[in-house]
Image (cartoon, rainbow, N blue to C red; front, side, top):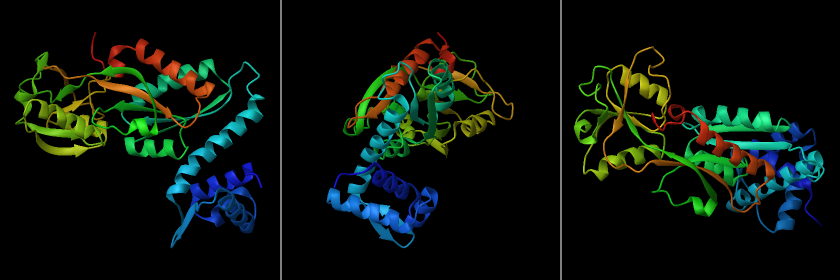
Length: 312
């Protein structure tokens, strides 16, 4: 017996919802139909896809790996139906983008707008999150492409997907408006190390910013941590400490309307790379290729403040 698309659809739906009952309700079929489809799929693949737990079903290790392949096959089937095997010149189908939370506000609106103008028949969907959340989504097939920072101390991307560089952006310091160094064009971390630091704590950005102090043999005085860069700007504007970021916007005030100073960092700090990641186990679709091209163009042509590279 060959694997059917219906089995894959039922499998992916159960994986998303966690129970056969919920999947059956969403699919408008009986619970027995879903259970039988999962059982048939497990017999054909000779693996166990789910573990039954008190609150429902959870994927096995083999199930997690299979889910990514299943979703890719379902998307290919959708493309076949909607694109007539891509014989038409018009690009269509669905593109699922995952973007690191702090890159998203600076890059996604531009890229999505550019992409929508060029390819109006593509259904673009996007999700923001932490690095770990997004990589899990790529592994499980929820995302076709990710936009992430290229943290050099993380060496797991080669096992997950292919990386393509979009560019790089240097770190800078945010200072309260009345800080003693707020009027300087640049500051050194040595001059700031004893001051209270508001650390951007969205993993693994915290490791990256702390590594800048390590390079100079410095120990920062971490007072607060936050994974929300707007909260971070608000704390700095309130005079509760300084911070480090890579994203830079034209806005120079917090949500409360309080100002802060953006100052360049002295020192030879390697800019932080921005990359797109695609699954290594699947061929690139025309949609993903088009998205990568759009992202490269936007990153190259955008005003320097908007993507964090500072004034030119």
